[in-house]
Image 1 (cartoon, rainbow, N blue to C red):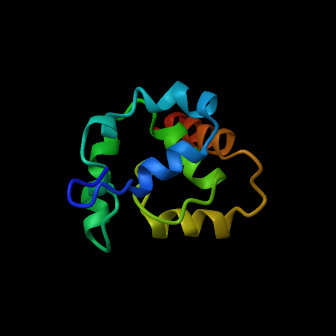
Image 2 (cartoon, rainbow, N blue to C red; image 1 turned 45 degrees about the horizontal axis):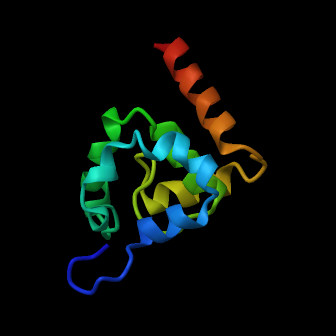
Length: 113
């Protein structure tokens, strides 16, 4: 919630719209859950700074996949800016399950290092 108006934040609205059981598994572990959600809904270069909280988050993959699967337009999700998510959606329009795609990409990066 935003302190000024009492209106719900975009983060809160999205999380409520996703099936409770689907998100409950990962939302409770998200590093951003206790911070100000409005800090993740910034513009431009501030998005990269906002995404730094995601670097050590144990559910970065699930969060990013949720945003991609649900075509979330605004905010930082899974360490990705709005622009980064749009690019992935364009480049990989064939993807059916983003959690599977992101997990496979993560495994490939680990084996390459």
